[in-house]
Length: 467
Ligand SMILES: Cc1cc2nc3c(=O)[nH]c(=O)nc-3n(C[C@H](O)[C@H](O)[C@H](O)COP(=O)(O)OP(=O)(O)OC[C@H]3O[C@@H](n4cnc5c(N)ncnc54)[C@H](O)[C@@H]3O)c2cc1C
Image (cartoon, rainbow, N blue to C red; front, side):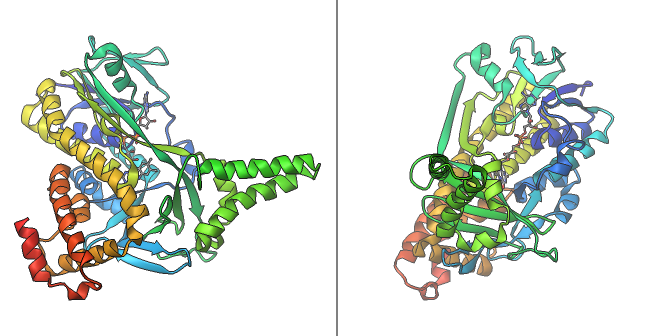
């Protein structure tokens, strides 16, 4: 392969991993990142935000030699710990096999590890505070807010869901560029459960905790330091929404104002009441664990959740979209980063086959990844309903119990969740097709019985194999 230099836009999770993959092939990479270097600024101040890392992501980390390092700092999560409103908890394992579990990792810890590893190679250079503002699809030049213009042998855009390169492709760079962005009516807010006074975890550490309440839910993932990061998924507007909680607070503040009460003390109390009332009704067992709940609720931003689809992903051999810039998905399958890491792994295989013939590499990448990105996008949207509604549905609970038993008894049986999460050898589109057929069958079987012990496992597995 002739000597190559690639311009990477975005030093997030996939951009940093990609730089390592390229460097290992002797391809130089200049990585431009709009934010400052998180290793010097944000790290010490910010609270831990975590992600579920599973087999597809681990497979990529393994190829660049970082899997063991990251897993040593991860907290294994063997199942969902379901919290009823009354405070009772029940663990629903992710798999019937002991070695199949997901891992809670620190987002910034992982990003830093990837950047540090990438920088060990002479060919990799990071440029921080360089925001890409345009990409010229004719010349292949990336333009930055600073006035800088970068042009390598090609550009790979890993600049996330709001990709500037994708915008340039859409607005004139490529004719008939397909783009869709679908927002959920739900947003999310991160909250915090600190470690106990003695440093221990305040809840079962090896689980993803979930408070499923029909129209909304909260989840909590463990951090290595004994804390948990909670994420509250709630509608933006309407009944039981972020707006409702905030407006209840404002109504109370206005009433305090009219009555000329001592504003600061009462307003703080009103703010506390609107959040605490909501949590008392819906997640009462979490309140004693969250001493900064009210402050976090009003200080932390409310994020949006959506799915982005587009096509094509490349401008000939001049540029490629990879990771969230090509396919941002909602987080309910815990697969956005895992899918982006899988992108890097597949791209690396194609470079192995076609060298620096970037047009062929990018065309084949798009052809192979687009159906799989669409498949995981749809499954992620559907899993929202599974997580918030179905975990409380008795037929679904029996189905999960049956699947766990089948996985325990039959090495070749994999639930849809396991195919998506633990089978890096299986494309998402295949996991979706097989998984949907299996789900339909098992739900029918579980609807007919009151107890899973009534079911003949051999008969079920034979039916699954024939399906
Ligand atoms: C609430 C939530 C929970 C999630 N949980 C999980 C999970 O458990 N498991 C999982 O696998 N995935 C999860 N995800 C998805 C995951 O975060 C993303 O899929 C992943 O971060 C995508 O990586 P990326 O590198 O493509 O994009 P990003 O991580 O968004 O990185 C993009 C980078 O580009 C930079 N950038 C942006 N614009 C520019 C520009 N114009 N110029 C230069 N640089 C730019 C950004 O600053 C950033 O560093 C979750 C997402 C959310 C929102």
